[in-house]
Image (cartoon, rainbow, N blue to C red):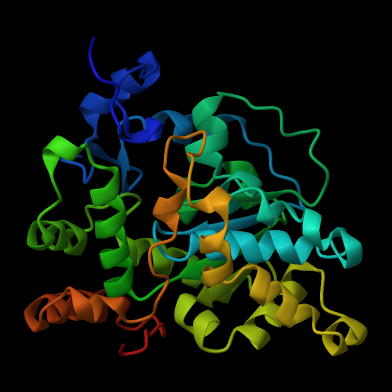
Length: 332
């Protein structure tokens, strides 16, 4: 009997709908980082089976003006911000004696705030989301131009989190190595760097993805909030208050006096979440091991893996891509 592949379900290439099979030959192709191929669709690279969820999401998702979408490139701090968003929006429900029943103590953040294309529309073509109470919380890795038209036409809020490209690359390299079948071994760091700098990574090019949402946040700041992972880590207190205000659930003076901000930051901290049993064992419905989302969460971890030449190459691409945009990353 053939052994079941260990890679996540959304990276497996079996059970691809005919619609996707018909489209794939027309799309540029590159080898993926895990096991699945990558295809250039609407200017960004997505895996073969990922295409199923993207098409279904674009076709069927109907945004509400009250929806809140968390958007990131892969490995930019999605897990942490998912936890923060969920805790912010539900803080009144799980205060006082209800703290011990908080869902974040029993469920992975990715189950509480699912990805539209990776989880919801990957598992079902048209999941029933209409019955969910408002405001609904969702996440996506889709670039702005690939969002469902209903999102772009609505007044729903977009929360975008970006991360220094060198740390993003290293985190992505580790994550995909863990997802690869054991017999394939790890990706070569230099070859992965070459792909990343050419833009060939899941939902890449990284810089185009970031710039798309940076532009949207400048043009319609009431709808799109642009955050940096490094700012969140360095000074989380004002960043969390800023996030709460944008989401329409600002902290009251009484909450601030009683330490509500600090309480959420402690609950959602890397140390706390990574120590929970739910995040140390088991898998998501989409196939990833929950522990794979909690490696380090540090700023500047790239220095432990990239030599000077490698770091300079990413810096050069970053300078070229971001020139004239007004967007800068700290030199970490």
